[in-house]
Amino acid sequence: MQNTVLIPTYRRPLDLSRCLTALQAQTKPANQIIVVVRDTDTETRQFLANFDPQHLPLQTVTVTQPGVVAALNAGMAAVTGDIVSITDDDAAPRPDWLASINAHFLKDTAVAGVGGRDWIHQGNQILDASRPIVGQLQWFGRVIGNHHLGVGEPREVDILKGVNMSFRTQAIGELHFDQRMRGTGAQVHFEMAFTLALKRAGGKIIYDPQIAVDHYPAQRFDEDQRHNFNAIAQINLVHNETLILLEHLPPLRRTIFLLWAIIIGTRDCYGCLQWLRFFPSQSQLATRKLIASLQGRWQAYQQFQTQNPLKPPLTQLQNSN
Image (cartoon, rainbow, N blue to C red; front, side):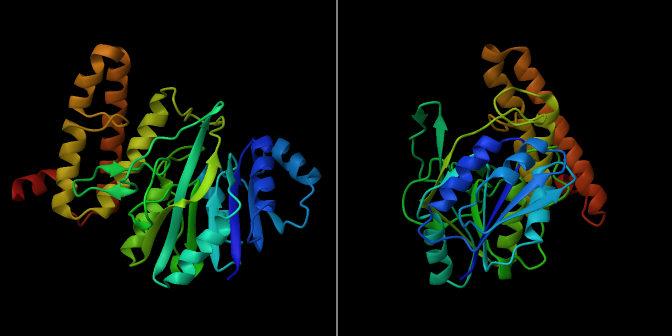
């Protein structure tokens, strides 16, 4: 079984160096390693020109459009392996990463996607909490991630995380990463759109916490700065999540999701009750988060209705239930 590793990168050559070094230590070597580089990223291009691959089957793909979605789609077009394993430039796969991934695909031909845990490094500390529920989409539309905290046996999930996910290329077929995902860099939730679409097509998606990468979250060079609030990044995040779920959920659950999202929400995507919960400690910041979240929901709903004119609008769905 031939393995391709796909790494999108942007302006993080030191992180990329650590990632490639980790791939050199794999117990099952990759047959193809594709690094996707932005045409304007001269620093990374210079690094790759001077990098000694030491027998790594390294290939560079250049992309002109910003964002991880364009980078991944450009890289996917060059994939030759039976399995494509995707990781971030700020991650370092552990030595048995590819061997463990292959074991799942060889064991069950119905498996379309495999992912695992990313051990997050925070300075000199490693985030070592644990959660039993990982990668689940609840019936009313709440998404549970926890891929960085997963424990237990391998199991089927709904969603994988972009830093550690692999796919059988035959199962992917003509599927592409969704170009409607907003953002100029991270384009948060792009992997949710991809894995849910793959699952709808009948593929099994497996999460195994023993398939591990070390993750060193690095600086982002776009509007999404991880832990610092940015209204545009928040709108984009909520828009992406909402559009994906509106398309994935059946009509009744779609309506319930919208009502739940607006009335309650989550600590990442505020609804009215979450705003009330955090307003005493966050004050105006909580209000800004609520406004941005509602804008993202509304913009996604408008886009969904425009692209799906035969689906009844929310008011009709509410009146029919």
